[in-house]
Structures are given as structure tokens and as C-alpha cells.
Image (cartoon, rainbow, N blue to C red; front, side, top):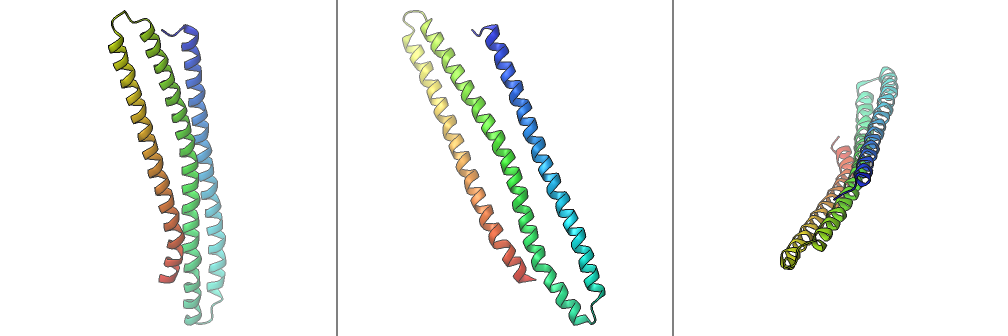
Length: 177
């Protein structure tokens, strides 16, 4: 049984974790807003410059050449924006993952302590049942750790693939234009 002090401490830790994660979520939103404002300002400035350049064009061939030159930076900027957005989301997500892993680890330890305490207070002759219970807990923890490792590997693979696609997408998009 948990003491009232342990219950209060557990609730306090949970509230602190919740507030910490909420702060991280807001940090991620702030970063995305800053990124979007920066991109919007740059696009507005670039649009003004391009409009001025278009107004100074003397013939259609010069206009076509100017348009062709606009597409390559656009593809590169789009890829950079996507990478930056992914970095923000990935960083925020990793904070949530760390908090989840810490909370699950603490819960596993607490449950193991509870099982050990129950085993010590078990009546004589129940050793086989206690051993089965401990084995089930160990198997569940092992399965949970395996799932965590598989998710981490899948995430790492997805990040690697996204980075590879981002590196090749901008040059390919620029060549098509």
C-alpha cells in the first residue's frame, strides 16, 4: 500500500510533468509561428523584388528567363521550410517521448516493488504463484521494452528516409522547371 505522502508525491510529479510537457508544446508552437512569420516576411519581400524586376523587363524572352530563374530557389526554399518544420515537430515529439519513457519506467519500478512486497507477505505455499506473477511481470516489461525499441528504430528509419528525400527533392524539382 502506498502511504499518503507517496500518493501526494506521485500526484505532484505527474502535475509537474504535465506542466513541463505543456510548456514544451507551447515552445513548439512558438517556433512554428516564428518560422511561418519569417517565411511570410521573406515571401513578401521576395514578391516585391520580383514584381519590380518584372516591371523592368523589356521583352518576353527576358520575362521567361526571369520566371525560369524563380523556380529553383522556390524548390530549395520549400525543402528548407519542410526540413525546419520537421525539426521542430521532431524536437517537440522527442520531449514527449522522453517524458513518457521516464513515467513508464517509474511505473514499472513501482509495480515491481508492489509485486515484491506482495511476494514477501504471501502465505506459505504460494511460492509457485508468486514466481508465476514475477515471471509475467518480467515478460510484460521485456515485451514493452521490445516495442519501445521497435518504435525507436522505425522512427530513426523514417527520419533517415525523410532526410534523404529532402536532399534529393530540391535538385530534382529545380531540374524539372
